[in-house]
Image (cartoon, rainbow, N blue to C red):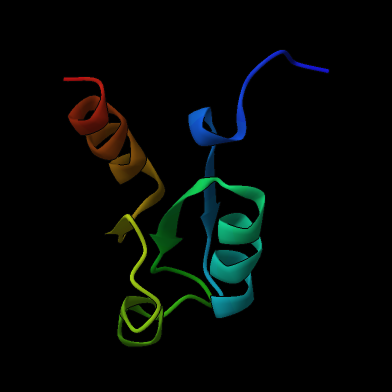
Length: 66
């Protein structure tokens, strides 16, 4: 409906099931290590990036646009 490919999408979530769901959909994944998300657990699933505050997502987006 949006006219974009799945490899152009990024999913942000804090749980392991978020990572597995995003991979099945073909999305990149940013682990959200705040709230209920924990860095130690998210890192076991090899996300594309892990951020510690909501505002950090812009640094990741900047890094993939270069």
